[in-house]
Image (cartoon, rainbow, N blue to C red):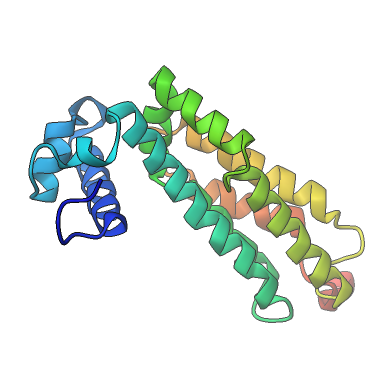
Length: 202
């Protein structure tokens, strides 16, 4: 059900962005339906007009941000042969780490109903970690065929390591903890190593 004259997708994104701001400013404990709609500058009942409740809202926010990252990962296929392989993969890895932010993923996992909804959606085919992993692996395979990735690099293994590490960092990072992005960037560089054309120096 949409408010008269307002498109649902716009309302969803408006509320999602407001929730991210609430979490960033005040932390997980401040995330309430009222706080979100107040931050969004809209009617108090708008969130419940589009979602069954806060648990569904949090789950949908998490899934939406994962889907955005999956779309970015799938775009890697168009980058084969362009730019730096390490930089291309790192950009997707960092986007995954920032997909909704560690706080959003953490909030979803601490709300049983939200966590269940996220798991069921992913099992049902919603874009998530698996889609991102497959996209990274496919991209690296294409780059290996172009000679820009060493033959010793196993695309599927690298993709699993990158996505698995991002997942771990998402679940263990909270406001106040050290920035985990440099760790992920270093991991990508270590897994891929220097490009083949650097020869013996690598």
